Image 1 (tube, protein in one colour):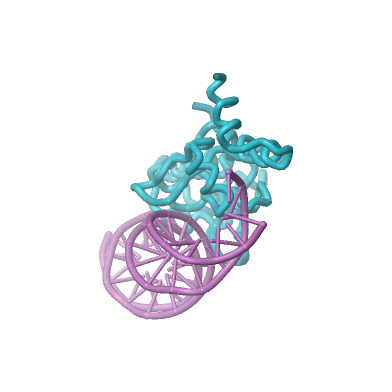
Image 2 (cartoon, chains in turn purple, red, brown, green):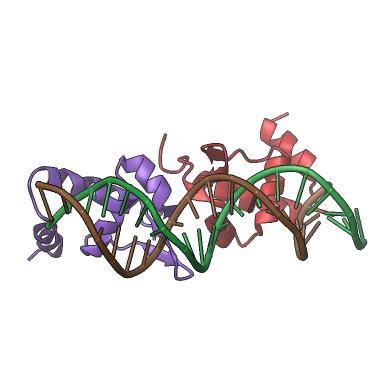
Length: 77
Length: 77
DNA sequence: CGTGTAAGGAATTCTGACACG
DNA sequence: CGTGTAAGGAATTCTGACACG
């Protein structure tokens, strides 16, 4: 596992780096678009790759896509 | 700034990744060996590079060096 | 010197829910 | 559907200090 995929960043930092609210970030997880780790069952940890994904998701949403469609795209179905 | 030097990791995660206690990590900062960022004046944020440094410091300490000497080495003096 | 710990406060994150459109 | 917010609890981090050797 490279440092790109190492899940070590907490949601506050992700929020800062992406410019999105924690609410949005958590929602994308709820929609099965991103899969952060959890430290000891609680706090979410994201990787730099996740951050990339999140920004991509946001762009696509702005373009009019729905989370369900994005999920299909990710699944390659 | 690459993701190697981006300070986004909190002390709890650094502790996990390095195997050191938060006390040790904070002490090395006190000794001016590492320089984490602070988010909004409070919480420390480290980079992957910092983690490398921390592990290196620990190795050197185990080898018998003192923090003052390590600081000199870092300064290249 | 380098590290442990108990102490109290402050900031962060979590979940489930109600709201809007 | 995607996002905002107020609510209360839980986990995390912070600082300054006393301790040991």
